[in-house]
Length: 229
Image 1 (cartoon, rainbow, N blue to C red):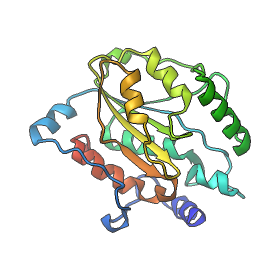
Image 2: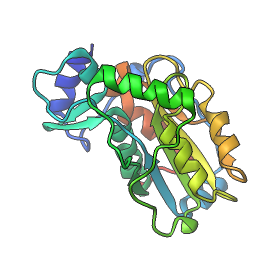
Image 3: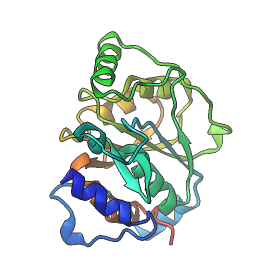
């Protein structure tokens, strides 16, 4: 599945990947429905997509299983799974986008990455982030995306949530995972981002279903009233 997925995506550009509803896995799309008036209200808001993604390679050649699991290849360019989802959300919602990058980059070796992620999780580490978001106060809706690590967000996401004031903002979570979905991360976001309205109906997609992401995200954003034609 992973190899065929990668080969399929290599042949298809981000703007041309179209999939039918029959390809959606059960439970892939949790929807929150808004009235037309609510949709118009949301479309007038300023939107930002914030994400953290760690592809385990930058080369599209001779990938091993772990590298394939963590990436999507579009026209020869390697994207992390969460990065790919974030870019689709940006494209379809007209949002601005910000990538969370650590001061100390994570290794691409799968075993080393697992060890570091586990240590950070167990010790409650708050890894430092390289850059800051200009005019964060001006955004109304924040999509927040991350991979599921150890049934939790990567600890750098807690750094991000604790560094900014989310009071009065709407947070819409999205994540990529190997089978665990959101786990307890939506509640963790709500606990960390005090004063925010955190939607429980986010978008979670398995690394085994990345070829379904474009269609799934489009339908999800339409249900949220945030899809821009």
